[in-house]
Length: 466
Image (cartoon, rainbow, N blue to C red; front, side, top):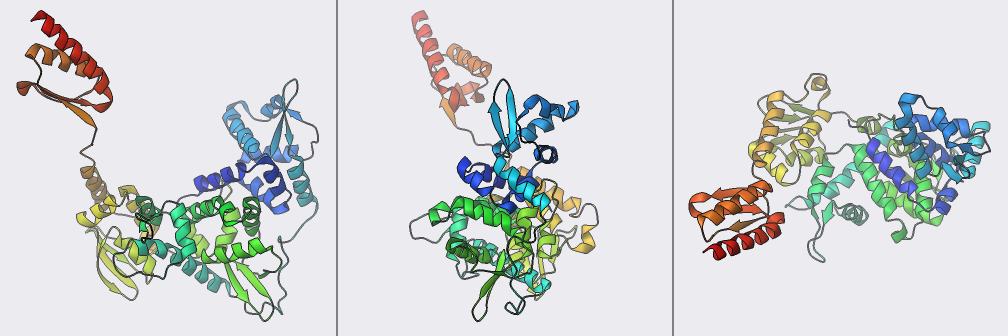
């Protein structure tokens, strides 16, 4: 399963984009500081630990000496990341100096000196008595996330809706550019980006939606800094334990309902109390921030692959998941379906339909590889070469013709003028087509101004000579 480095980096760029005052306020949270520390490159983490007990500003030359000569590029990457996140502050005296952000420094020192438990107190066992087992919690998270994706798949189906609409999820998809309403008050339809989103791994899908969710927080009346802090803190909660909803602010209680729709938490209610239970998707929010994280979505949801691709282009999917079936339908011709088995075939027509939706050959091959059944996942290659090569050939067939904007020229006064103009078009690299017998040529659109002036000069010169 692909790594999540790019996604997590984008999320931390969102954190870095907060105003300095709001970011410093965020660093007053003990767990936010730890989450940001996790996200830093290894060399930056080393610098933080060295600066943790230093109260004076350190010259940039001294920091540069901490890195080996062949690691100067990594050193600069580390410094840039720390500056963007305000982990270090720049002071300009006689030379450039760096001082660790005192707000973050104080919180990390306390974290090292005082061992703390989870960010919030766990509900007593005599109150939260109906807690799900780990397996039940994983099943819940998987079903919730599948229901989210089915909202997207349903919009691509010409038949009756697969699931009842969840307007919160649909709004998130619209903000992410995955759904688009072509007319006011019309049902949204899936975009090319939406089709590509379906083939991404779960981690990447989750982080993309979380980024959109945070970006739209202010419009929904939620403070973005408070939301980011809670999301990062949520990653440090103990999976499967119950935490009181009443301990949260009113805006965060509303946030919990929306996170439950994404499968990050499960909400339960007793006689008097209400509590939330973080799933393994929530714990991954913080863990996947680390650049060294290699966590896979199958590990997060406790699922395994189910697809077998044969050399005769037949596809067998040992699954009862409606989502998996609908995704396969995007690029395979489904032939029949049993309670726990879907059989289909990869045909030129089905693959070209996927290409028309913006899905690439590599995305199809990657999806089939990453969701391969355990019995075939160990073979190399997972997808037979005859199949993967043919999918790529079908894609290259579609890309043989390239559309370019151009201008058509004809009716030249003489063969001499035509040949002069033709040679000029060649010399400037704009000639696309020529027909010498009928004095015609086609030139790139961006060179039309140059060609028009040249033709006028040549026609004028020919008239003077005549």
